[in-house]
Structure formats: C-alpha cells, structure tokens
Amino acid sequence: MEWDLYTHIYGQHLAQDIVSEEVIKFLANQTPARPLVLSLHGGSGTGKTLLSSMLVSNLYNSAMSSRYVHHFIPTFHFPNPERVNEYREDLKEWVTGNLTACARSIFIFDEMERMPAGLLEVCVCVCVCVCVCSTFGEDVINKVALKYRQEGRDREEIQPSDLEPDIAHAVSNTDSGGGFSGSNIINDGLVTRFVPFLPLCRHHVQRCVRDQLCQQGMCGRTDVVDAVVGDMHYTPAQGQYFSTTGCKSVPAKINFFL
Image 1 (cartoon, rainbow, N blue to C red):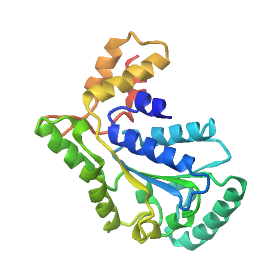
Image 2 (tube, one colour):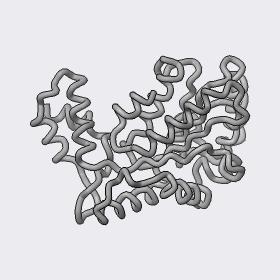
Image 3 (cartoon, one colour):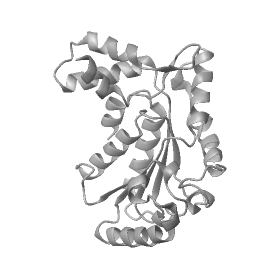
C-alpha cells in the first residue's frame, strides 16, 4: 500500500504518512477495540477519492465493487433530509448485516458536507469509515499551504500538528450542516485522524497529466502536458500557485487537446 500511496498520489506527504501509519496499526490488531475512522479533508481533485480506492485495493486486492466495500454518495443514497430517521434505520441494518459477513468492511462516505446530519455515528463499529469531505477544513488547509509558499518554505515541512487541530475545530464548529453536525463520532472524539490534503501546485498537475498520458501509451506528448497545465485555473490571483480543481479536470482536458 505504501508503494501505491507514494507513487500515484502527488503532493500529499501528510495524507500518505498518516494513512499508511494508521492502516498498518489497524491491520496489525486482530481484535481492534474501535473502528479506524479516517476523515479526509481538502479541495476538489487533490486525491481523496484516489486514496480511498487504493485503500480498498490493498485491503481486499479488489476494486470498489467488492461486496465488503460500501460507498455512499449523499445526493444519491440520502437525497431527502426529512427522511433522515428512515435512512438511519436502513443504514444501521445494512452495517450490522455486512459486519456479520466481514468484520473489516469499509464504509466510504463521499461529500460529507451534503450528507444529512445524524447518520455517521451509525458506523461506529469495527469497520473502516473513510469520510471524504470536499469543503470542511479546506480553507484552513489552503491558508497554511499559502503561508508556507509565500514565506518560501517547502510544503513538505508542514506537519500534521500544523493542521489536524484546526481541521477538527472547523469540523466540530461548523454551522453549515452536513454529516458532521452533531455527530457522536466528532463529539466523542472517535475520529482516528483528520487527514489533510494540500492544494496542488503546477508541477503536481504536470505529473497527473504525464501519468494519464502514459497510461494511454503517450508518454512523449509533452505538447499535451504543456497545453493542459496552461489551461488550468490557479489561485490566488497574485502568484497563481495552486490549481483550483487539483487534477480533477485533467482527463477531460487531455481528451480536448489530443
């Protein structure tokens, strides 16, 4: 798993180190007393979904379609906030049933900011809950990354302790609703780690483009690399250091410029 994390996820030394460490510890314990709850935070296209897929692949040597992997998308699985009690009972039954089949089932909740409040605590059981959040904590993370860049410091100097407490505070005190609102997982301190995903720089986007092209047998298309990287949008206005969408739009832009 470590090889996958450090080879295919770009610019995310914090996520790579934290996830690798926590998964190894969790798997080494045959009877864990509590679930491994990895709460992934950061902007769009920074690698949260890719890391979740790698976690699944390495734990079960299979794809996201494994019967032990349960991927929930709020707008699809829980579209009506008024039915939250019904969703909670359904989810509780689902979790209990699947844990009977495999005590290490993985439950992945995408776009937590769109998830109705009160569902997440159902998964406080011996499983892996990966909470992929595209909004909560993003401003905190980006602010620290920008500060390091403007001070001329290497982003690899950023430590988990520089971000995790502030992310936890931002999530715990959010007034914008979402799946974390009033969750026992947050209030009782049951999140194993808050995992920050830093905004991606131009050279990270370049690596994303090259990787995609090589997968298609076109490693030599430097013209496409330059075109895609040049067509991305960057922030802030002065400096334009970070891609506003990470690598999310890379596949579509490659198709456009081929």
